[in-house]
Image 1: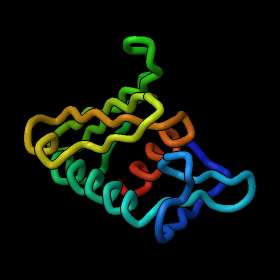
Image 2 (image 1 turned 90 degrees about the vertical axis):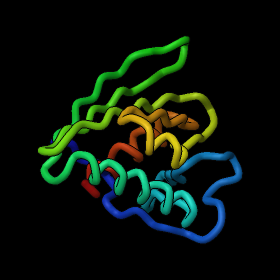
Image 3 (image 1 turned 135 degrees about the vertical axis):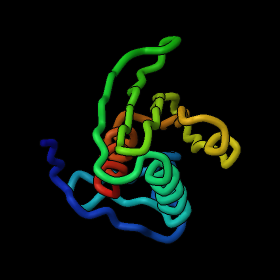
Length: 127
């Protein structure tokens, strides 16, 4: 079992931060995400659910690719498997609709490790 201190994600208007992060993570209070990125997160979860069905299992493997810190995440369910590669690059890139349509391995660039941790937490909560 994995637990995070804050359990509620606040969805806010506009950008959550001027530094380009996905989640604002104040030392006190809940993490925050913009409405735009919350919609992207919802699409990612919808695409995963469509392929794997109910009752999923997450398998995570941290590693480095070309000097970047990565987290390979395999989401497995009754009807299939999806592989995510969360790579800390300093910038954010969601899978495009074309990425979702071709294959079940999706690459997501993350601004930092905090964003990768909160993204994984939110996907796990939804699925």
